[in-house]
Image (cartoon, rainbow, N blue to C red; front, side, top):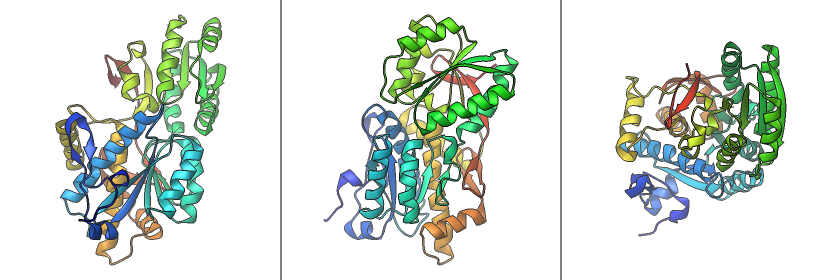
Length: 378
């Protein structure tokens, strides 16, 4: 029986030992008629942890869509490694558009998104972000949608929390890329407007691993708190080196630090982090199915990243189902028209509501890391 290469296929994902997923191979005739959804995630290197997390959420959604027979055609996920870099994003998006003919691409990381968006836009391919939070991802393209709140929403929730607790003088360490630069501007603007002060702002390269000099300089400033804005393995190094330098003040960050390598780090205890609200006890059937199956497969609770990429795939299925019933083709233009007409969708976490830019609205909370778990900050 003819099959397509396993390297490029993740369809009807099934659980195996270790919590990984493997694809069910489609027959050649199934593959030819399938809806091709691309994934553009970092799959190797220091940010591969995100790619694993993002993919797992999408894979469970494919499994559910397939089991429910929501669509007349099968779903295929074709992965490309973005490497977490703009160059990798451009190369990967070109392959997904021109070789794999994907009509809908799951994407993450701000720099990757900005590099990939023009390619997807020219081809009228819908791109859905569930991981990048840079401010300029809003309105990036009519075909670029966000199922994750962006960092300005996180900052607007964090700043009143800080001011109320007299944490007015904040030092910042931020990665020098589109995400980090956007966060720096948002934090400086909102903190200053609220009567606070950014006492230091140190830009770092995405590849940097040594922060002792920055930590020593911050220690002499005696800020009330230190905010770091990075991602992947670099985050753990920042936390360790700040604590090793004798900085005992509260550490602050954004939702990118919800990954296990940070959550399980002893030095990260007490970390203050903004993130999407996630109530896994809610009674809505979509959320309960997702959480129940997740716990059964992985033996732990999902994260909001898992939620977001599950929702990204479910959103496609709901839109395509609507178009199939109306006898309309499924492409970038019809998907976009259906999104803007419907606006409200039953997703994991409750009803998702999209604005004119294709951005979802969700509640942001301030949490504290306690014994490996994120709990609502007091």
